[in-house]
Length: 148
Image (cartoon, rainbow, N blue to C red; front, side, top):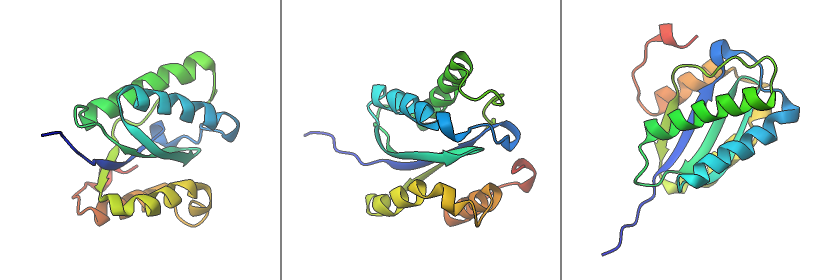
């Protein structure tokens, strides 16, 4: 018997202290780099986008790849890439934590549209409000002290 899986995730992480360092002109370079990491780990990227202080990634994660290891690699490698290439002069680091939310494949198109429209979305809602809504939607208990 073959193995068939569908692990659809929305991954969210922010710049350290929500510093708005991810300026528009170089975002696409960062996104291509992150796509390369996902591709090398046999993950399928559906969509990546963000604004100046955080990213959203919609991806299928290969069953042999632990989520925490994948996100650690994404953050560590991209941190080095950003600094080496001088993409975002105000970028200091990524936040310590992250959000990783699983979804049914039926939510894929809605998630892609949501991530595609991040710039418009954040004209109406802050990152904090968005993140709390995601935590509540997934019934994740959290401590407000850690939601700077």
